[in-house]
Image 1 (tube, rainbow, N blue to C red):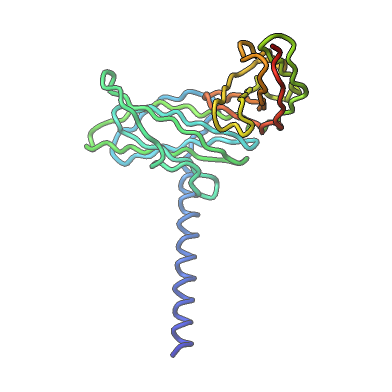
Image 2: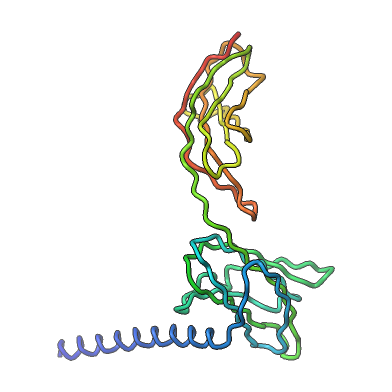
Length: 243
C-alpha cells in the first residue's frame, strides 16, 4: 500500500513539473512568435484596439544593467511585464504603480530592475473595462551599466585654520563626488552633519574651535533616473580644530 501511495505521489509531482515547464515554454514560444523589434532608448507610441489584445516588444541587454521602463497609457488601459527568453518574469505587472493625470486622462508608471545579459520581451496588455475602448500607450526602455564604487579612503584630515578642517580623500573611479560626515561623537550616533563635496579635497568651516571632530567619507554617483549609488565608508579619522 505504501509503495503504491509513494508511486502515485511521484507521478503527481512529475506531472506538475512537466506542466510548469510546458507552460513556461509555451509562454516563451508565444511571446517570441509575436514580438516586434525594439531598440533601447527609443520612445515608442502605439495602441491596442480591443480588450485582451497583447503587443510584445523584444530587446537585448549586452551586459548586466539597470533597466528602467517608463510607461504611459490612456486612462489605466494597459499593463506591462518583462520576460526573459525562457518565459520567466523579470518585471511583474503588479509591480507597476500608475499615477493618473486627471486633466490629460493619461496614467504613467516607472520601474527599474537589474537584468542580466540576454534577450527580453516587454509585453503590453490591453485591460480596459469595455471591449470597445481603445488604448493608446507610450513607453521607453533605457539601460545603464551597473556601477560599483570602491571604498572611500581618507588620506588626511588637518586643521589649517581656526574652526576649520581640511579633508583630503583618494579619488575614486566613476564617483562624481564624496559624502563627508562629521561629528563630535566617535560613534556617529548624535550630532552628525553631512554634506556632499564635488572634489576630493574640501574644507569644512564654521566649526567649534579647539574641539575634536570625527570624520568619514564615502564616494557616490547618481544614475540617470536620480538614484544615488554609494561605495563604502572610509575608516574614521579625528582632529582637533585650531582655536
